[in-house]
Length: 314
Image 1: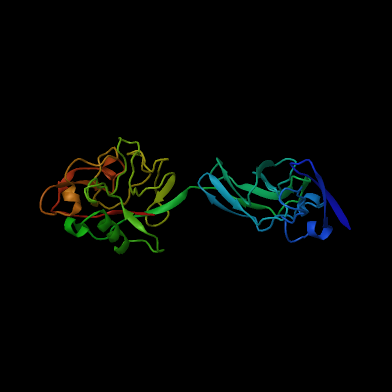
Image 2: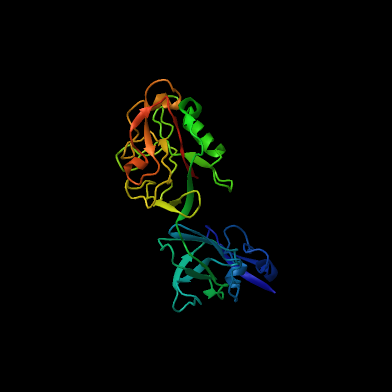
């Protein structure tokens, strides 16, 4: 059986072209077409009378305030309908609906701790046919939780050597929690990398602007090395308000270094020549058993002393 397609050329000639039905209806090729480049194109999906297949392997990853969904493509689907609800047994009548053209979606602006239920369908909008719904999945977004620890040993300034040296100590110190995570030192330095900043928390007091290699993540819960005892939750800029720690970094009276003033700015003193000179100068110290501003910025003490480091999971 042959079908006819009319082609109008720029010379106003009408040409009649034919193609076999099986050329149009190749079930393995959505782009199968009849005729040449400027012909009317008819694809298998345009003449199909059946909806696309139900999408398979719906899965997701919860994060802070969002859930990222993905699934397998469905043949002949021009869009996917994501139905969601905060109650189980999602249906197209009562559920909320989000339309996407890709086999993935990030559902953002949702509430941490709330469970969200999802089903999806595939739709061929050319013929207005929608598949049935997929299996239901559910996820609950939440803030990430990361560990902190105080080094079990104290280190002289020349041993620390630099911000990078402090990071290396964090990952080799005996107090590091098990699990294989990478840690960085809560330590700033404005000029130790070829006279440029190595690590910065903020230029403007308590703002978090101009950060460089900053170690605290935004909107994240931080706990002690036990993985349970809460310390604080950072804001959208990876900072927290001094004096608002739920618990101190540790219960022991431990003195460390940070290089910061009480407003997250890099302190203006010498910081022991970028943590490499243990002979002269002073460095900003911290008292890790406090919950006030002294927890990260206390007195300036001698570079000849040895100090602990506060290490943050990345």
